[in-house]
Image (cartoon, rainbow, N blue to C red; front, side, top):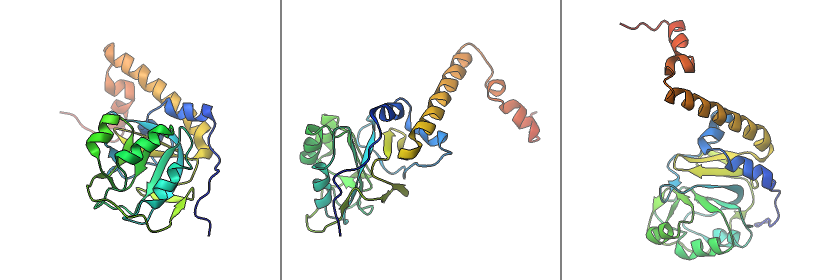
Length: 223
């Protein structure tokens, strides 16, 4: 059995830039309200954001051996996306591994488990998205995988998919859909910007959004 796949197909730089130009929430809406991981996975510090190709990691709960191996596989701009079994009792990632990742140009970490050394990681400003903090460490004993399909936060993520996260949470954008969903996302944000300009100029939100007529069509009565 192959445990580590070192070479994956990544999106182009232009595709990554396209995904980075819009918010995760917009991507989620543009792809039919799909791809959002469990909202329990949040940035360790408000204001952090991440967007890049996924290097996927499967770890046995309570063991971070494959996460360490993945750091050596990831390229600059990649995001480590880790399935650790939803383990909230231990923190298998901390200041040392954050330093290792940052020194290699890795863009961030998304993990369905806790991390530790919260104050140090926050001070670094390196993007970590996790389910929280836990001081208990992990062992390094059991093999898992790097760059195979995984499920994180209820979402199937393949190596090379784009993961994008901010204060609203994390979304997965399938590599084969980047151009189509990216274009829809850009158009959606442009329309929203125009709407907000109109609202600032005094436009009526019900008329502008079409909700006034929709409420009437549904038989809504105002008194």
